[in-house]
Length: 150
Image (tube, rainbow, N blue to C red):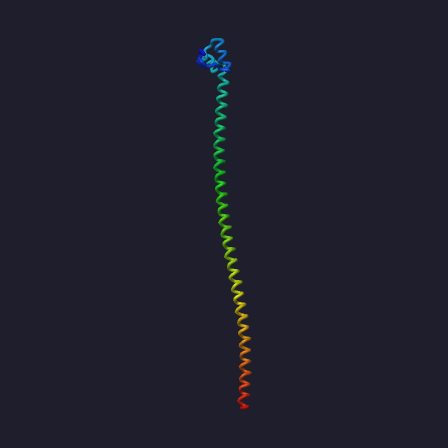
């Protein structure tokens, strides 16, 4: 309480060990903090700072590589989507061509059917013409016979 870490009206359930030790030995917390920063561990601090700099540099390099990988992934996804769009367009054109081909085949079949009907009609007309010529010839013979007899 005297150090100001715990309020006058607070009744904490858990008290940090450093707070307890500062209270028990009536020590100044500034001295406690400064003692850990200074002393014979200057080499260790320099070593730790160097290691921290190495880790920071490695982290920045890792971040750069991750950014490059993200950019490459985005480019690959974009290329894949573009290829899929081109494929879909090609499939649509192919389906349209197949549809036109089917229409052309149907049109050809209809033309063949009309041609066959025309040939059958022509054959029927020739048959009727031949029949008509024969009837005409027979009637002329009968007329000639009738004229002779008359």
